[in-house]
Length: 247
Image 1 (cartoon, rainbow, N blue to C red):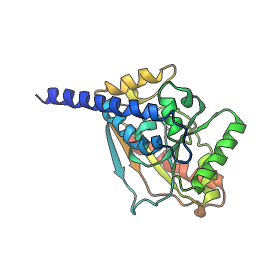
Image 2 (image 1 turned 120 degrees about the vertical axis):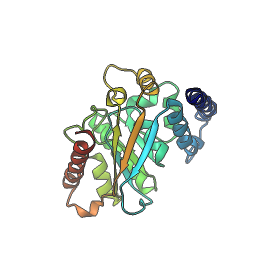
Image 3 (image 1 turned 90 degrees about the vertical axis):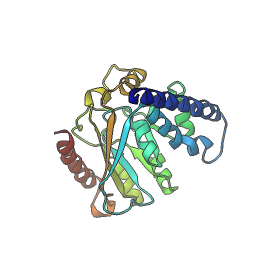
């Protein structure tokens, strides 16, 4: 009986995702000045995607005080799931790799939602993305990005890139660190040459579907002399969390 109820709930979640996705996709074709209507519905769409995939997404709030109104969220990046998991929980605009905007169906929704894009291996593109992030933050937008510079595997990469910390130093907006822990790491980890559809299938059929998102105290850029000291200090915290949750 319980298994049947779960199956019915999952089926309803998939239907709900379809019913949200189709009008959202059609809306994404509309030219719009200012914040696009798709951006206003994007968090709801991400939550529908989480339910349709059947992921048990859990938010662990380790921060002592309420979160600030403005922040730059950073997280480790072992999977494709956080591209919907993070905006399902936080009202953010994400920075994504350049290719995402050309993905069928999802790419158009991401563009309309205000997602920023960067060619990771192109210095000019990285500079342009950094200026776009500064402009967005100064305009009151909360950003989400992954300083490892892409999906680097289940364990923390050996370094962080400087973009998030440079933007925080220039704007005075704190970094909000979130550590992602997927209990079924083999299932959620995105490896080459897996396609996005293959990875979504793996996630949607996972036996252990729990995703733990640990949110810690914001880190004030005013505490550091420069972006490199800032980056090193935050990276050290991630190393400790990597050992705590995955070690």
